[in-house]
Amino acid sequence: MMNKFEMPDLGLLHHFLGMGVIQKEGGIFIHQQKYAKTLLNKFGLKDCKPVSTPLVPTEKLKREDECELADEQT
Image (cartoon, rainbow, N blue to C red; front, side, top):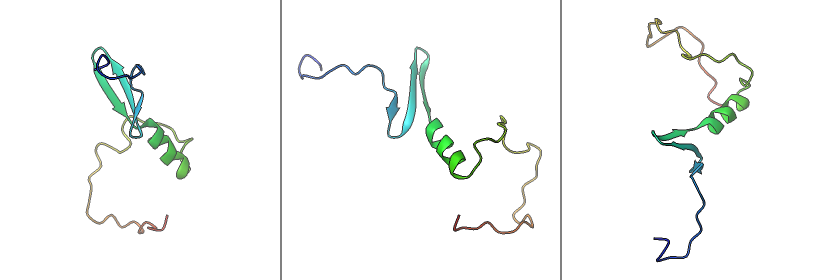
């Protein structure tokens, strides 16, 4: 294609449509690290302790959990 049209070689893709792209021999990894960090900053959670599973794996989910309703304005 470069023989037919004049175009520069920009190298490997790093960002596409707001997503990060990591290309290696084994495949392509697409992530949204920047978006996740933006959300953490927006809701004041950037200094929280990271965990591999953010929920308790043995927790039984119920339709009604007797918690107060979330403020949809936030």
